[in-house]
Amino acid sequence: MPHMTDERVRAGLTHEEDLSLLHEVSMKTAGVSRLEMCIQCGTCGGSCPAAKDMDHTPRMLFAMLRAGMREEVLRSNTQWICVSCYHCVVRCPQEVHIADVMYTLKGMAIKEKLYEDSTAPDFSQTFVDMVETYGRSFEMGLASRHYLKHFPLRLPGMMPMGLGMITKGRMALMPKKIKQMDQLKKILDHAKQLEMTS
Amino acid sequence: MNKYLLYPGCSMESSAKAYMESMNTILEPLDLHFEEIDDWNCCGATEYLGINLIPAYSLIARNLALATKQMHPANGTGGTRTVVAPCSACYLNLAKADHYMNERPSLGEKVNEALAAGGLHYEAGTLDVRHLIDILVYDVGLEKIREAVVHPLTGLKVVPYMGCMLPRPDYQHRWSDHEHPTELDDLLRALGADVIDYPLTTECCGGHMTQIGPETAFELIRRLVADADERGAQMMVTVCPMCQMNVDAYQNEMNNYFGTDYHIPILFFTQLMGLAFGKEPGELGIGVELVSSRNVLAGIGVEVPVTQEPAAPRKKDEGLPMPRRWTKHEGRKEAVK
Image (cartoon, rainbow over all chains, first blue to last red; front, side, top):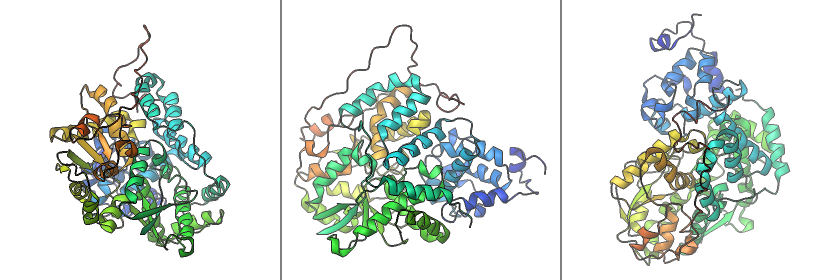
């Protein structure tokens, strides 16, 4: 199979298509992804408020998916820049679950350690850790842990805002824990063993 | 009395406490009764969904399963099967889980297999998940809201900011339009406010990008605030904790980043409802916003008590270079590999 470059994808030169990646992503996406229905119209990228910061527009990314460009797709920053606003979703003429496909790609990139920077995946992981420990999110713990680790130089600049939130009673200093944490843990532990196979 | 099951969501207890407090003040005048779902857990926001599919939907579905236990007529909720979620992200997650478990039965089966490990079960379609403003506009009705108004907000120039996750993707076909819904406009008009047309009403506030790629988020916040300002709005009004947090708490950071000087307060629609219903600003959590609404509200005769102002930032130590503005790529590209 010739190496798929951006140029070859744009030119539609995907004659030796490897649709296994497309199917894998589709299967791992919540609901019926309709990913195979993409007609490359570009409405998604044109509607995206954050497209200018993306390596590839969603349309381009889906073309790469179809071409089986696994590593390039999972290394793209597109899924991490997606703000989950669903603008693309409501405008897509083919009703592709675009935002949910982005979640799937994030999960795959994390599992395969294919991402260029660790900030966004780490933020998600920290959030998940909090939820798995307390059952609730803990904004103060999340923000401070994240900033300390990734943006220590920004902390002084963030002080007025953080202090403002605290003095105005808008930041709980301690996390809240749900009563039946053991039940939630059992559910999540079991859920982690289940994969989507159909 | 109309009874509903309430899923508050984590931010209603911390950063959006003002939303919770003001919501509680309008229930009685509108003859609403909300019963909190016992021992609810976080909906996972947008973060958990990006980590692992079945655990993410199991996390959400635990709340739905708990809610079905409380909807039994015998326990006094009147048999309601409606869950009210005041947070847009929570609303979307709960509604989406119900929708996808139905659309893709194999997902529903797996989620229920996981729930069973905790002795729970949820049958897709059992509950009706709705947002607070949906209940107010379509169940209570604008007429009843108008009747409850004792202090019309005459002369208060506001833009209605719906945010993105509420009217989109709209799996339940709740809203008048995906991109230009009018529910919030109508409600604010019923309160007597001077509602300015706001084409950006469903544009994104940046969501969690304030945490992981601030330069992307700042641009989105800038567009919202600049347009509101250009249209002569004195205030933005929101239905979403995340939107309030981003536009309010990060407005100053955004100003620093672009060298602009916007000061547009953003309040929850329930806070304005409370004011119109004759409640005191103190009961409505007014005053805890970082971009103060004090001067704007003074213009319509509402006096907001002075709350404690945030302490001034610590002075920079000489010789320690602290970047005043964040460089373009600091966030994403130069983070720890």
